Image: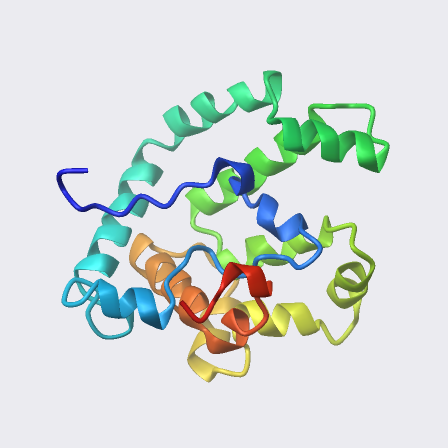
Length: 195
């Protein structure tokens, strides 16, 4: 790399598949305090600076070209990732297009501006791990409280508005979710959230 750009892509866990793990990934991307420090001065305080501005611009661009993105990603319906095929078979789903279509539905919701925590909450409902299924379906909605940060009045207000977010609002929500200690503290220990 000549530009020193960070491009964190793990296609094994792309399209929200991390929400289906036995210890689900609740953060949208790695933005730990260590990484924020490494990104200084670009990250700005709490990820608000050049990093946030770039994230907002990427979201705006993706939305303006969402049709192209969804068309390209539709290839995964015809040629699903091996993990998706394996997961469908493990669940006893005979329609091997089910999981790719479901993943692309979530992608479409993100591109429309649905609150990231709302999409993640729905993804967690698909998790087949016993304790996750139980937590996701409880009437007290403990996973929703965690992923939406409902203890924080400002975050709760945006989440409960149930409206589509602007790219700016969506960027703020993603950064808050990615830097939330309550979420980072629940990551699988091998993910090393302290880094």
